Image 1: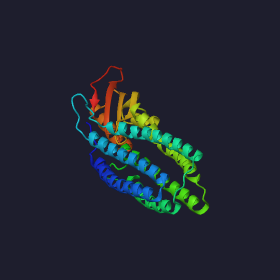
Image 2: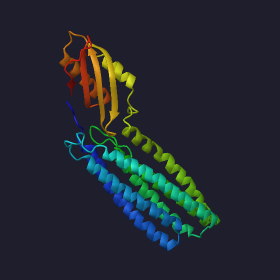
Image 3: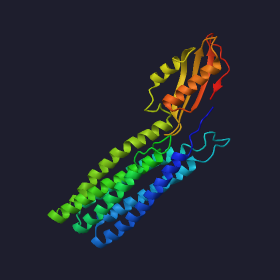
Image 4: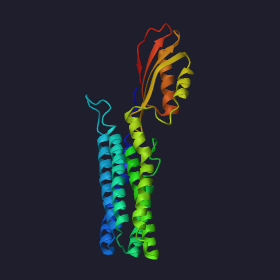
Length: 302
């Protein structure tokens, strides 16, 4: 029997993202006003960055909503992977954003522009505080019995982390401009920020691709899982074993198991079900039992 996970963790992610969206929107307004008052292109550029993050949060909220829609005849697993697609697009969009940051940084290295360093530092300090709060909201939390973040919330965390790094870089650049007059500090810091953003988002994109390619989840040792199934009384062989992610929260399994003729098939299926749920947190599973004469028996689905 399938035991689909409740939507409690998805709802918790959605609540946190709404708060992050409100914080990001307020800071976006603050950066636009601060950039205009200080004549700082760095702050205005970071405001554009923040605006793209607001769009990314809205995309994540949309994919979380879509992922909770019920299954249909044509989509028997529902829309669970909408969250994965949204998170993957977020990661790729972040990479595209880095390219534009680097292009702008190169231009400003060739043609430096004066900014009011003190005002930039003040706005950057506010940004560090707000982004740190948003990062705390989207970092790993245990929400309910299933806990953990989904990829939509992880995608937003990567964006918030890039904002936090960006605010720190703007603070350093503002300090260098204010105390030393080194106006090239702003584009130089932007180049470093772009590299850090690429590094922090790589894991998100790679995991999204792995899930869409139905790779074995990184936290599951397939050999250990096979050995544990073989340890169930009456099991002689396990073959055609497949384990893949439906989403970051849900793992699916299918397998063929050869059992001895005298064993109680219902008991074997029950033992395997309890093992997979308890030890590996796998609730979507299909196990087909075969007799030791290799003739296929009635499949067991649970």
